[in-house]
Structures are given as C-alpha cells and as structure tokens.
Length: 130
Image (cartoon, rainbow, N blue to C red; front, side, top):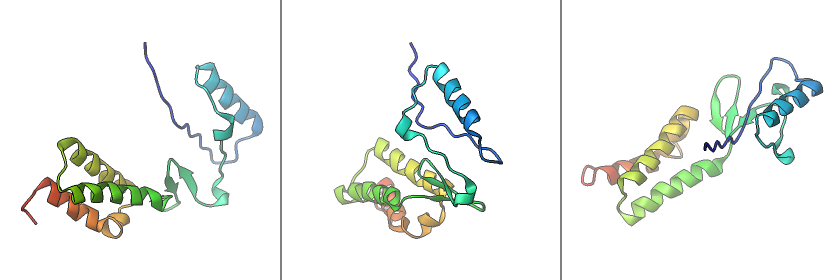
C-alpha cells in the first residue's frame, strides 16, 4: 500500500489557460484518484503581479518569501532553542534546513531578519566557539 500526499499542483502557461483546459486538468487529476478541494483551487496570472507558490513569491527577476510570518516562525524556533541553551541533532538539522530553504528562496533575509538566528545556531552547534 502506498500513500501519497500532494499538497499543491502548479500549472503554468505563457497565456491565460482557457476554462475548458482548466476543467480537463482537474479531470486528469481526479481520474488519477487525487481529491481536489474546490475552495483550494486558485488561478493567478502574471499580469496581476507577483505569483505565489507555497509561500514563495515568483517574481520576474527573483524569488522571495511571501509572508513575514514564515521568517518569524523560523526565528522563534531557533530563539527557543537558544533560550533553552541546547539542541539535539534533529533540532539542529531542522534549523539548518529552514535556513537553507531561506537561502535558496530569499537570501537577503539571512543578512537581515535572520542574522541573529544564524549566530544563535552556530553557538548551539558549537558551544564555546563564539
């Protein structure tokens, strides 16, 4: 038995996708035994401005984080570990993964809003180094 969880499906095109094609796309998805929640279907066109895909803004020249709460949650997670004064290997890996994702999506945030968090993580991973 296999369970697959697909959170989001993105379809892109150079021109707006006609209604008939949108219906066919949904039919293909449901034909392959995936459920589509009607309230979660969203259509975006580049002429409306920045496109958002799973909390990432897709701009013409770069990517960015769409929600400051995402950065706030990462900061809070690392700050909580720092206040506790310790972190296990799983927590260190989790924090590193968050920061690596931010570096990929919006690297400027590492220099600004996540600067302190990066220092805290180094201190947790290497006690006595800083």
